[in-house]
Amino acid sequence: MPAAGGIEREFKRLELVLEQIVAVERARDAAVMEPEAGDADAETIACLARLGGIGTELATIPVREGLDRPFATRKEVAAYAGLTPSPFDSGQRQREQGISKAGNPLLRKAMIELAWLWLRYRPESKLARWFHERVGPARGRIRKINAVALARKLLVALWRYLTTGLVPEGACLKAA
Image (cartoon, rainbow, N blue to C red; front, side, top):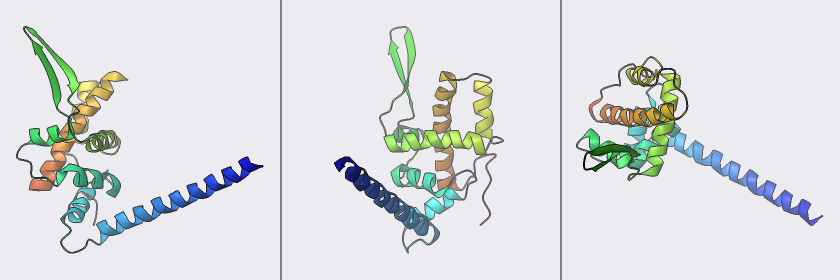
C-alpha cells in the first residue's frame, strides 16, 4: 500500500498548487481593479482590458512583457516580440523563412493566442476581415501562418491604442 500513500500526497500537493493559483489570480484581478498609487502598469492593463475580447489575464502579459517600454516605431514593437519576418537573400534568390523569433517568447505566444481570440470575439473588426480575406476557405498551415501575421498587426494596434488612444477599427470598449 505505499503507492496509495504516494498518490494521496500528490493529490494534496495538487490541491495546494490549485489554491495558490486561485490566490495569485485573485491578487492579479484585485491589482487591476484597485491599482496602487503610482502603479502605471495596472492602469495600462485596465485600459487594455477595456477592449472587448481581451480579459485581464491576456491584457497583463503584453503590458508586463513589453508594451510598457518606450518604442519609437511599430517595427520596434514587432521586433521586440519576435514577430517580424526573417528574409533570406542570396544572389537572385529571395525567400521568407518565417518569423525571426528573436524577441520575447512569452509575449509572442500570448499575442498569437490573443490573435485567435480576436478572430473569435471580434469577427467584424478590420483585422479579422483582413485575416479572412487572406485566408479564405484555407485550413491548417496557411491559417497558422496568417494568425502569426495577425498577431503582429494586433500587437501594433494595441501599442497604438495604449500610446495614442486610437481604438483599433471594429473593436469596442466594454462598459465601465
